[in-house]
Image (cartoon, rainbow, N blue to C red; front, side, top):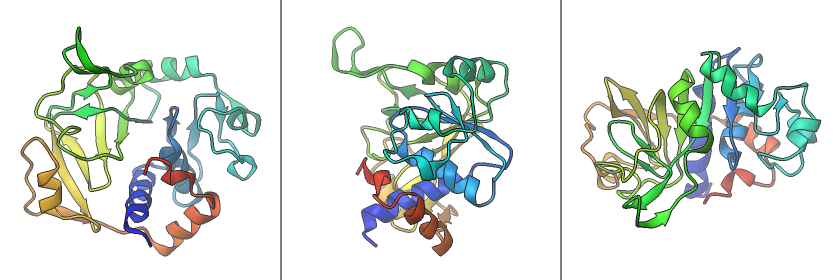
Amino acid sequence: MDQEKLKIDTMICVMARLINNRETVFHGVSSHMPMIAIKLAQATHAPDLYHLNIPGGVNPEMRKVSSYSTAGYELYDHSRSQFPLADVFDLSMRGKLDVAFLSGVQFDQEGHVNASVIGDYHRPKVRLPGGAGSAVLIPTVKRALIWRTKHDTRTFVKQVDFVTTKGNIDRIITPLCVFCFRDGKLKLESIHQTSSSEEVVANTGFEIEVDGVAITPDPSREELAFLQKVDPKGYRYIEL
C-alpha cells in the first residue's frame, strides 16, 4: 500500500478505536476521515453508538450514501432518526455529548487551538474560518478528538498566534503520531509505524518526551477490508 494512504488509514483506525460502544459521537463539516472512523467503530466494536452530524441525521445508512459529503442531505434522508444541529450544542453544554471530532490549524503544548488567524489578530498574515462549532464544543464535550493531516512546526507550535478555544481535548491524531492531553499538557502517546521518533521531534515545535513511547498498531486486515468496502472510491484520501 502507498505509504501516504497507509498514514490516513492508520489515523482513521486510531480514531475508530477511541470510540466506545453506546457513546454519542458528532463530526462537523469536511470530516470524511472521522465520518468513516465512526462507521468503522460502528461495524466492529461499537455497534450501539449514536452518530450525529451537521445535517441532523442519526446513524445514517452509509450504503445509501453515494457522495460522502459530510454535510449533505443524504446524511439526513437516509438516517434512522433526526437530531438537529442546534440540539447537538445544547446536548454538549448539558454534558451529554461523549465525543466530538474537530480540528484546527495551530496547537500548542498547553492545548490551545487556533482556527482564527495566523499572525497578529488585527493585521493577520492569514485570516482563518474561526471557531464556529469548535469554540463551543471543545470546552463542553466530554472528549474532543482532534485530527490534523498536517504535522509540522507551523502546526504544532510553542505558542499559538490566537487562542480560538481550549478545553476537553483527549487526543490529537496526525499522520505521524498520537498526542494525548494529560496533566495540562500534550504528551506523545504513540508513534505510527510509518514514522519515527526523529521525524516526530523534527516536526513538532515544542519539546516532547519520546523515551518509552508506544508504537501505534497498523490497521488490521479486517479494518482495511472494511475501509475498502465502505469507501471504495477513496474519499478518505481527499486531504492528501
